[in-house]
Amino acid sequence: MLLFLNLVTVLLAALALWSIRHEYTQRATRYRVWAYTPALAVAVAAMLLIVSPGKRYELWVLAIIVGLALGPVGAWLMKINQDRGLHLIRVHRTWDGVGAAAGLLVLALARLVTSNLMDRPSGKFGVLGAAAALLAAYLAARYVIAVVFKAGKSVHLDMTEGHNPGRTLVP
Image (cartoon, rainbow, N blue to C red; front, side):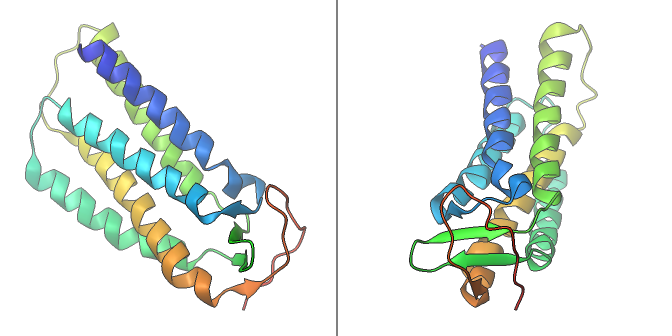
């Protein structure tokens, strides 16, 4: 059962990394597509917290608070353009979201390897779950600030879904 749960966690983390590719490729995507990454990240973090042998709730709460504090900073630094008529949003190439999603994949793989492939006893500190909670909270807060608050004030460009218009205008 634990092996299956860890494999599902790795799959969801890989999907989270794949779903944020629009930030790396600078392509225009719909608002709902932007929601996939934080939703998958929260699911991965929840699964990693559930299977965590060390139940350190205070560490997890602190990690979530730090992630929620850092997420708006990441969103504030993004250069966002949108097409209001087609409900498309596009950002200049960013690495923080891609790095956070890649970090979740690394954490999920680490849990799979250490729990199922190695005979390594856990230190029961809950650090892996706390790191996943921090990254998921970061991605969720970044999404809320970028799409809900910052995108409404961004410059309008005529865009086509899935394409990079080749320019970024910053207000």
